[in-house]
Length: 440
Image 1: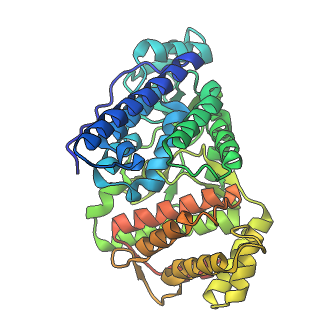
Image 2 (image 1 turned 120 degrees about the horizontal axis):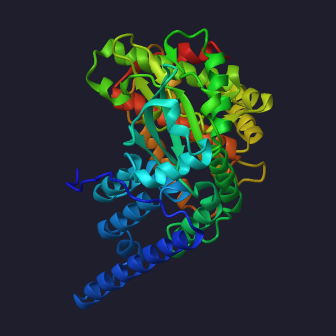
Image 3 (image 1 turned 180 degrees about the vertical axis):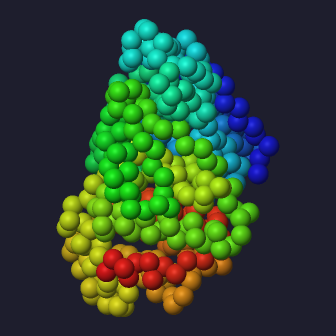
């Protein structure tokens, strides 16, 4: 681990389009300056450096992370997704620096916070509260959370969106994509327009707190029969597009369970994996953000607290049935059935070269190993994730196979990957076959 410290502090969010564009310009020119300086040093010593080596330096990663953390909004959100998806592929010192984007963000100064709440609740809003903590209990890419007690006795968590986030989403996504194009980190031949449009759509949805409140209520209803889960109650009277009010529920970070007894770690991951399949096959609605911070744990009761439903997505009955067919074929070792299900889902097309189809089929078979095994699968004692990553990187490096599957599947994959990563962190042991067979 690097000794680089991340220090969240009050820092005004640049909310204007020009001020955010200037930040991107400064970031790009700073990176270019670092590359030119390092390149000159390498040439002076008789070396011919590669552009990627000049780009992926700790200094440049620190510059990007610092600027995205300052900007927050969609820019930071895209950086978080990149760091989550590519973190294991970066050198450790760079991964450590980028990981700061997944920690608490800087938060708004009191004056900016007051301005946002005045615009949403009216200038006399403070009279409704017995206590409102100005220092947030959490801060992330799109908003920050405050604890408050109303005069009528409610103990609330109030999520407040940073100013200008919604207006800056489209330009932020375009600017981050432009930086990646210029840097060479993204192949020029890859048509990412559908992915960018979907990223914008998802971020606009996440920035609509009334929509999130709707899904908060939906999940509370769907899990009313599941006493092991807690979904905070929505408080509609204080919720707007930019402010979300819900019950404050005390809990600890899910990662603190790493030191818990094996049986408790296994139980918790069994609950989360069961919920994942229930979301896909029963609810046909999934909270697709795999951030560990979206799960909390009640030590006194052993219940799991579910937070942040902004990234919730609904799936068609056809999509759920296609995945059910894929799982059935995989468990039955029916390779042709797997091939057909993969085509129905859209991971590849009928005209995809045979070698790439075979690679995808082999990767799927690899992913089924934990489910095919009888008894509990030990997430701590396996190399499936590493082999999957290596196969995926090899496939992605082949310029003949740059194919973006349907966006629903990408969000679903991210959630599956996040749960797998959490189970590995917990060193859990779960009978996956027994869980999934309930839904097939």
